[in-house]
Length: 370
Image (cartoon, rainbow, N blue to C red; front, side, top):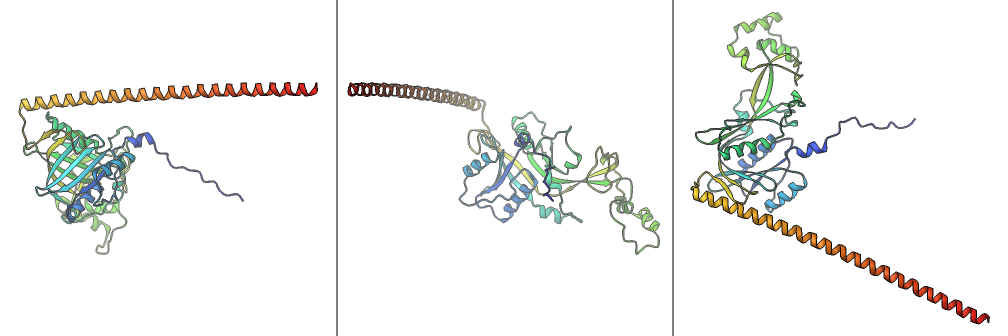
């Protein structure tokens, strides 16, 4: 009996589409302490699955080391936490040429702290197998730095394809809320829960779980009718959060076209931060915006002139470099052509010499015969 041949049935990944998915490194720089190190791990968890979850930094690692590895792994963004005497900073940069946004973290709470505040926290399951949904609140201002922040936050995560997206992939939500008065940005991380609506907790327990414990009741009707004496919070029927499922969702009984209530359960971490400055390059370059330094119109005009001058100089050097490369390639091609001609001439001379030697040998043989 022959061996069974394995036939692969898994769906092949689209390499072109995978290359467009944003990927990130979340690292810490310098001595940050145990609490901030835990925050770095929590932020890595929120960025799943398109991040290096088990990335380890060494004391000898420099920024250029991560940038070199990021280019090989198609990493698009770098998040760096650092701690100074002034406070905690978070830098978000676009690899490889920037820009870089620097935030000052005023307060934060770890995932463990958020779970400790909940009465019945639930351990995460398969929520991190898909990327979260991004919600930006109050980022619709006309200021350039606000638009740049919104673009940077959106590009940290894969875009939503409404036509092809599965409803079961929407498991988490990340919220960026901008306070227009204080300029502070609030980062929150939620898990999406789908609940049965219009019924009490007793009926919901029967629908979503196995047979409940009925030892304390004489009849199942006593278990169901106890909802008549329950509080208002036991019956969850909020019309604003009730939707009709367009597709089948994860969970028992969450079939298509069923009425369900959507609940957001916070998972953590929480971060309260404010924009400090924007740099043109990757953690370096010209400062495009600074919250603590206000420039006059003359200084802004001078800055624009310097930028245009540097761009023109960069274009001139690039053109000169391309010209030199083309010149070297032409010279190399000409040299190879001359070597070929010399080789052909030498081959021709050697053939003529051989013919002359053969003729001389024939003449000698003829003389000997005579």
